[in-house]
Length: 188
Length: 203
Image (cartoon, rainbow over all chains, first blue to last red; front, side):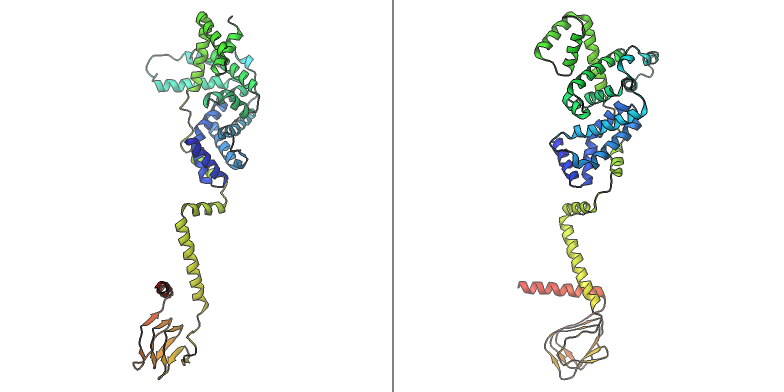
């Protein structure tokens, strides 16, 4: 039902109806933003990239092939922008070098659990920012895969299409990323 | 099966939904007997849950508006086209009205000269059309941009546009005398005439 509506909106946008693009933004903004956020780890920047992604999608809508999944196409634009942004920010480093440490952990472990503040919401916000912090410790190429895999639960094949890397590589990176996060998050 | 990378690999395959039936069975039976692997597996599943359930990751409320405001301007052609598609009746009415009024307006602008029907024994003095005594006009009489003075007889209606009726009591008009001074009055008169014609054709 929603897919049909989106497909119709895409057709309208292709014909030049700009207002139909609003439905598309409305429908995908959450996922696109979340994927960008997972990759760059900063709300402001993630929103910036997500907006840019939608604008580029609009401008290049004619090159979208309607026989393929729109989300795949849109996420590719978004992840490419996010990857570019990350490259400009700081150099990549390797996963293996990162695994031994649980540096950030102590700080959080020291927060006294005295039952005054820890409402569920506050706690979950704190947990979430801790999780994001740990994800940010991963190299960019793992972050993009983790974003795609765990935000929209995309299949390995779709991820390989979006990032234009072989399915085997996607698999390996998911496994390593998941393993690394297991070590970082097991005390949460 | 030993607690090595092979088992861990199976766990990942399982979590990716990418495991064969045999492998899954092997993994299950190993997990039943190996506590270390159970813990490992539980931690992996928990990690997935932690990084998946993140529903409160939402952009700001005006995200859509911000995007829409930054899009390049739509081509005019399609704005018009969409408008036509959404309001076909209004568009048709508007086009009709524009064509009608422009043709009538150009008609109005064209002649500011005195005009009157020719060949009816009418006399013109300056900007006054005179129906001389003893002359009988069988039809309607329409005078534009001039006055009229009827000394004879008119059997039809008399219409004076942008002028006055200077008729002395001696003259007689069988039909109505209509005086139109303003442009809108004139337009109204034209439209009324048109409607009357249309309906008389219908009959």
